[in-house]
Amino acid sequence: KNEVEQSPQNLTAQEGEFITINCSYSVGISALHWLQQHPGGGIVSLFMLSSGKKKHGRLIATINIQEKHSSLHITASHPRDSAVYICAAYTQGGSEKLVFGKGTKLTVNP
Amino acid sequence: EPEVTQTPSHQVTQMGQEVILRCVPISNHLYFYWYRQILGQKVEFLVSFYNNEISEKSEIFDDQFSVERPDGSNFTLKIRSTKLEDSAMYFCASIRSFGETQYFGPGTRLLVL
Image 1 (cartoon, chains in turn cyan, orange):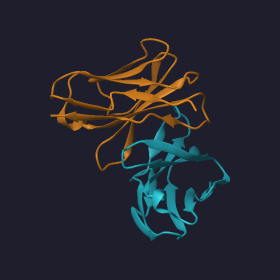
Image 2 (tube, chains in turn blue, green; image 1 turned 90 degrees about the vertical axis):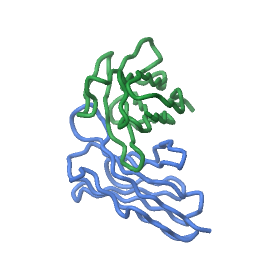
Image 3 (cartoon, one colour; image 1 turned 30 degrees about the vertical axis):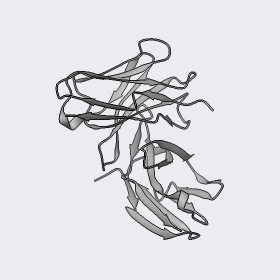
Image 4 (cartoon, one colour; image 1 turned 60 degrees about the vertical axis):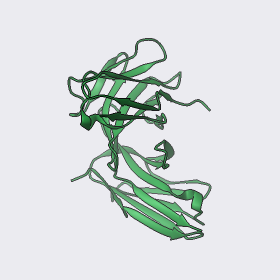
């Protein structure tokens, strides 16, 4: 069983739709990353959060530590949001390595 | 904005050859990481490095792999005798201290023939 699970695996939306990607984890974590990976392969950090909610532009990330669950929301989605979104956890103890989910491939059609 | 850089961006090698992947972390960062992503799979942790020594390594990081920080700026991953299954994208990452955002390089795509 993966320590970090994401759903859905693939998501297709129409431009303007509200998007939600979910992440659940089974290990104790110190923080959670949401990352974006574009077709060329590069990885960009969107958010790091350990409690509550963070917002950046049209992106919102929330985390519920008790339920071991996080969500990434995209409001007013746009074709340029098309990418793979990855949830990754900093596990407690150790060297602050990241444990990754499998990613959610988002396609936003115009 | 400071960034992590990696060279080369692509490398093709023959099975059994040695490869060295290079990374230049952000200059005031202290903790360094290598991850890999086999095509179509999730990103996996390989090794973390701090204070000139390995702090943690995964099962993937066997005797064929080594890391080094030969000077104050470069951080290298060496694969001594490449196998077909080493074909993957390799990402370097760094952080200044625990609890901070991890910054990723653009990756090196390694193809072993």
